[in-house]
Length: 146
Image (cartoon, rainbow, N blue to C red; front, side, top):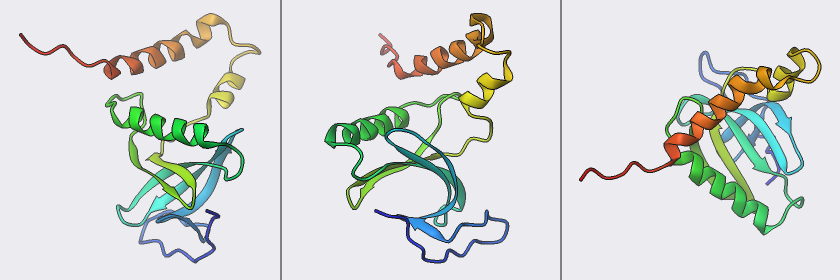
């Protein structure tokens, strides 16, 4: 599904959309892109909140990549941890799989790495790796009480 040029109408105090839509979401600005797809800041007019929309570029990837993005959504939705973004919605629109996720303010990993002196030493990335590892721990199911 291509982005729709239907004008969006933000509420008071809401981000100013670009006038483009994807599914029910009003696109505000691009955030990034990669080999598989792109991420946009968007506004959810139903729930009145900012979200990040991650979608696979149509025609770029096959069924396996679409299935992987849906599995990613299911895995993220099963987690509840401060270091893991919340998934608000996932679906498929005109053959394009998308995730609507919590929008997190901050810098990208690439930007963060540039703030370290040259190539980050293992000690510089240790706090990030530690946080990433602890964010995986809640994925394990607790053992039932005897």
